[in-house]
Length: 299
Image (cartoon, rainbow, N blue to C red; front, side, top):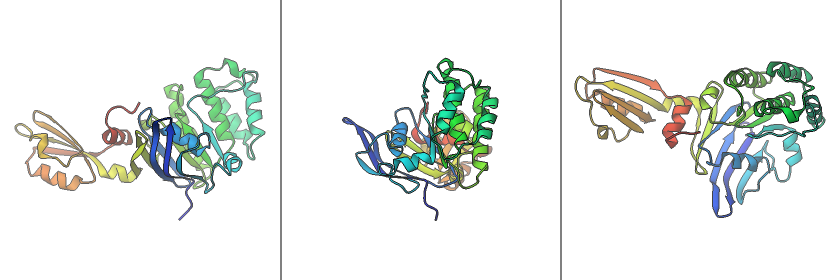
């Protein structure tokens, strides 16, 4: 078994009397794209700051590359890149100067990748960083993060402020190319509300709710377990109370919709015993799995 790139064990962090993380544990394997999902205020950014040693947890352990961020911070940060939700640059620098400054701290820096991304994002190297929009600042941060060729890319709402076309290009082309350049060696840890746009990249994920991990799963396994059944009946559909093992149920006249988690075959047999005219089954998307797990809206 390979050593996890990120390993959090029983992590607890409090802001005064408010406990933001309640015994959080998760493990991220090398070469994967790992999703970190949950509502605003669930504790995602707090967990990320703990693994970067920007916050010190009250209890629990953090390991990145098998190292302790409190003792080995410089080595860890030389091997990762971090793009937060809000990015800022020295206002007296140009885009070119900012990238040169970042490159001076990095053991590896790809000028070819840098030039390609600057052109792709249509960023002017001579432009002052003080005049960049929020979306352009995010783009510049992403250029610097990926050009440094890190082993671990930590992204906290990385597409915030980007327009839909740039978001799609970044997620599907840039992140995919970053990992494909070194298969099995480059890891992405991403906290995002735009779950649907990362759907095809996510290998595993943790759903956080009120500081607790409520679901940790491989993405393909989760899609197998979480299923939706839609049934139509000749007369009124059976009451939803007839399916207490379903994750959720909705009845509308002749139609019945059930969402299940891991017990689908038994519920499907029960549903067919009610002699519906038709039954359709489908796997849930990751976004639907998050909503089914914590309810409501994740934004």
